[in-house]
Length: 253
Ligand code: PGA
Image (cartoon, rainbow, N blue to C red; front, side, top):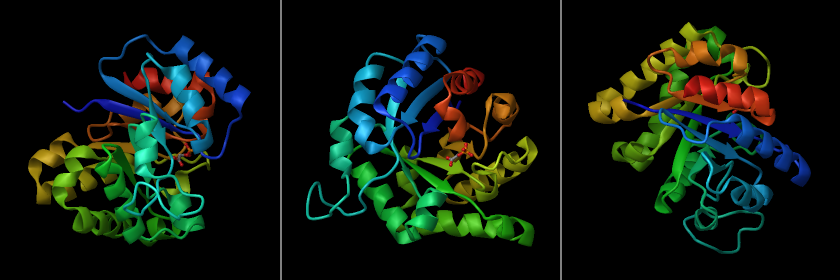
């Protein structure tokens, strides 16, 4: 049985006092133990240490939004944060391949694959994000687009690496737009993703957590999580509100 996983991607939001308030709210609203799900938050790197202290001994796990693609623990890479540094602060998850990074920071599939590798080299679980644009969706060839994004990473890291990874399907047209894929639309894609993995390895396909992302909120979470191949969510905007995010987490639990 796959557990549900709900990850809050705070993106470039927050402040010291705002984060404290948000986490205090979450700690109050989430149950003190979880049995069917895992909850994590990915703050901006600068706040990781303070968040780590505040969520210590709670059900909330820590993740990062980005990681250096180079295979070094430290070095002359201005502005970067290495996998080793994230591991030192107990980050369990790291997002790789988010569409905002692919678009605004021109991250190629090769860079995404390297980030995936660096994460695993330090024991972090990469959350590989894939997604199609509205144009690609309307053009009808979106499964081919998603397959190419996955295949580029599978070819680079090997299928066995997906024993310790998570995939997040995030249609770009649904991110931050308020426009969610319907639960059926998402399920169709999630099933296609799992089929692709089962062509390589049935056991990996069966245990792989495939999250949905794109305008997930309290009002649509339960319907999404009821789908057979949806194993949780990557949540942006709604992860910045304690009541919304905790309601999503409770639906996953
Ligand atoms: P959203 O963002 O929930 O605000 O649509 C999701 C994401 O980008 O991970």
